[in-house]
Amino acid sequence: MAKEPKQLDELFHDTLKDIYYAEKKIFAALPKMAKAAQNEDLTAAFEKHHGETEKQIARLEQVFELIEEKPQGKKCAAIEGILEEGQEIMKEYKGSPALDAGLLAAAQAVEHYEISRYGTLRTWAQELGLGEAQKLLQETLDEEEATDQSLTELAEEVVNQEAQSEAA
Image 1: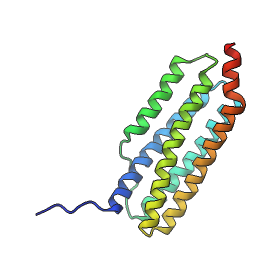
Image 2: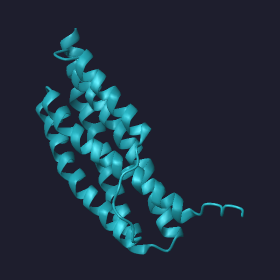
Image 3: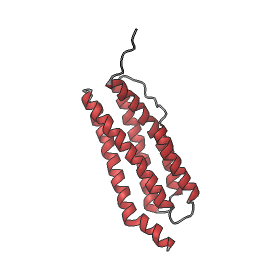
């Protein structure tokens, strides 16, 4: 008997498990990044996003409920790699003027991954007629985009200059 081809709803569920795993890993990494940061504004940004991430995990659990699936993660190699790079920066640049610039860049790599995933999931939810899931995913996407924007402003207005001026 031929195996049925996988459908969009299965891909949606698999991708949901991927971002759920990623958010849990990010939630664990943010306090370490906040502790490592030298700039108070960057520390505050990491702490703020930690609180948002907790709400985002809860929203994902609501989406699992809507599709009548148990909330569970699926190992995400992409986020593992991005977070590993962040850990390397914390280790290699500890005490360095460039540490915060590196941490901020690592955080933005995380944000860009999340923006990509949430945008895709939101679009698939729409295609699958999952209106409530679409709204929840859009809410998180909006938060991720706002975080990315605030990190960009922090980089351009403060952190990159501090890294350069302390090096000079």
